[in-house]
Length: 404
Image 1: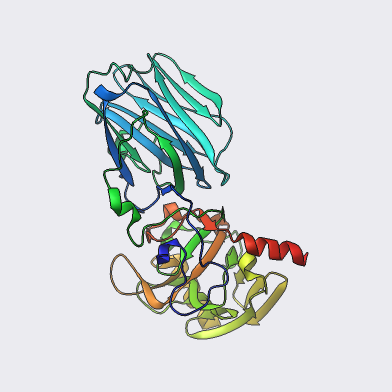
Image 2: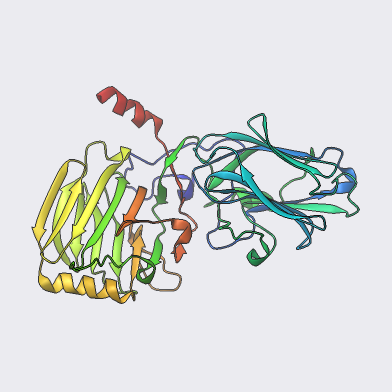
């Protein structure tokens, strides 16, 4: 398997994230970060369409993004189905109406859901898991009688400028489709073999919440976009929280740094230890738990006198030098630096991870100064990262159950 599908990198053994099988016949629609265009598209000859029903199964943990887009006339007659706050949302724009409506329960639960969209006369119907969810009347022309020659369908993005959407949407979607049927036709994706190219993200058979870093990419946030951490009449401090799931390795999973310079703060794995470092100085290290693959809560707190790190049930504090604290404080409050997740930046723009210093594993609920980070909102993110899902190793789940 390619690295992006979870194969081990190099000769280092990965006990947590290796050898995962792909979901047969499934398509990952979240291939490219920062590109609102669809992952895959197809064109259907409407003169041959006899059924105005499209259906597919969909799975995600992502709360917001585009599932599919369709149009008969770009920017004039289009339809979008997506998620907002985990619930299905339709946006319809044509000569009859401009409408956006959402409803039903949250479906970003990591389970497969069957979705059906039907056009009947002037109505559009949305079905979920065999039940009718929404019916909108007087909102559309009948597709079967459409005077235009074709309909374009794109998954995981849109074919119009984002400013034309009725409600602004973060189009990126970390999700998978399978068993699709578009207007009862056999049209093939125009991208064809490129959807199976080496390095293309696949769909894991089983997933869990988190962000998966396969070991060859990073995400970055501007410090100016993050909370300062300054309170009333309080000295500045830094607080970081996350759940860390990884095998023993050598790699940096969090760093605070001026651009392309030595980080002033880094959290890294060095074989079986989690190491906290200020500049080039190792402040403390804590061993990974035996069941580190399952995810272990990590808390880091730095104030003017000490650095405290808690990993699972172990907590350690060490004094720090005033110079190191002031360097970190000055950079953070200036907003001029970056927070890197998944590796240290090398040369170039956009920043790529330094060879040999990237992280492979699952990070969940990353909070910095109390703010939950959303990798869809990063300043930069490698295309190889799964923003809202990690592969689940069910054999490890069974081992953990057996130990309890």
